[in-house]
Length: 156
Image (cartoon, rainbow, N blue to C red; front, side, top):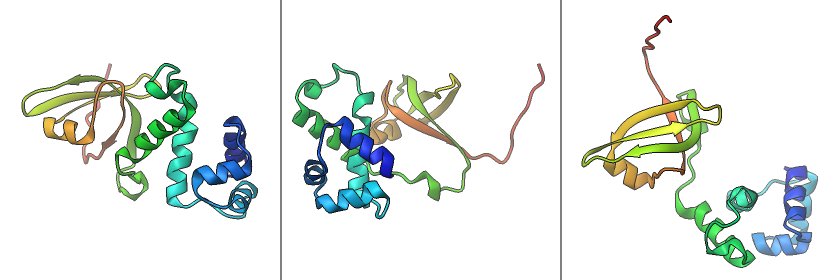
């Protein structure tokens, strides 16, 4: 965590002391994280992930695009909007992360298509209630977990 954490802090233009205040810890704690002596707790990890995603957001996204405090507020809101899911606790090994590129809502069922960075698309039909509960929409990040006992292969 040491080098990426120091780079993030420097990219944000913050001293260790200012970074510590932002994260709710002592400056010595940030120093220990950067030296690899200690690791951030779960709460600080979520804040750090939100801060690290800041450059990935479109420059004109949201009202906080020009106001750093508002941007921080939006990023923290995003970080805590949904519970964090630890995919490492699942037995399924076929896990594919991407973005939703198609969402066809029905009264009861909806079709969701997730595109991976390699351009591969995975489609699924799930309940519309699940679409709403998960907050899925076109452009949002999502993942597909495939757990099957049978695979059908066809020749070309």
